[in-house]
Length: 439
Image (cartoon, rainbow, N blue to C red; front, side, top):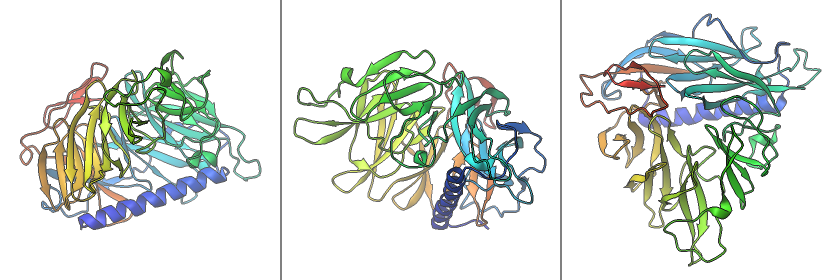
């Protein structure tokens, strides 16, 4: 039996909180049982977490999908490239933390690591989607503590090692390939950290200052009031805050932007910088992370964390306006704001994939076209928590740590959204609608 829409959101929130609590506890203690080997590694899948589905299909709750199988996983799965990724905590005498990759075909890989310093970062190594997994040398008897923590990048497609292990001081706070010592990395406090190059895993020696944010090889370094963007591979400075302008916003001479990390730890290739206009009002301006160019603004104050769709490079920001209404703003680097949508109630984004946004707005579950914001479907149904580029979706169930994988059905979704791969993305296979899958 599938949960109601309200139960789904409460269930996801509870599960996410539990996963974060366990991860935080493991990361802070830093000395759970492990092996003497340092560096996460790909191993045989063994008993897969994916099994035949026992859930009952409810067309009212699962419009446009058919059930494939279930997956039992401890952490809330997320998407990296064309793969769902989730983890299983040590149990039944197993001392390892296991990360599993799965897609529409089932479980495709497993990576084991010491659970003493839990952490992952989704990134791109060249043109390939990758997941960076941490490991440490925590001893089995807990007497030695942790003397070294390392990061290793694996292909999201098959868990082939791409670089590493590279020594880092601790986990990432979620803002890209930035790693800091625990427990400070688990707070909002800015601490000195190590920045890694996404392409090679090498430590970046930044001359500017503290690493603030990183996304797919571009990094922000400095302080909240004075910062620069660098190419993490070459170390070249792309732009500095002193060179920026707010575009269409009228500001007094000498006014500069401030980076406060609004809208959560990751906003993709978009930076949200706060400017003070000539009337003394704070204005959130959208900037292209790579070029620094001003793209538009977000009206209101943040009402949730950003949602980033890697395939279309769309960043979705939810805010509450001064009128009390809620707004979702869709923005793309190089294009600016492509659409906005207002709602009388908070807008909660659930997932994106295959050119579609899944969200809750005005008391209903809705699907919207990522290109236009046009509503495709609305009603009282359970939303997926994650969607692959080929449209395969992951839905919650009424059982703890159990999710259902479902395929999109062309007969019930005849107007399948188009997928547009960037020039750097491979089109190595097609989905059930014969569209390219961007990896």
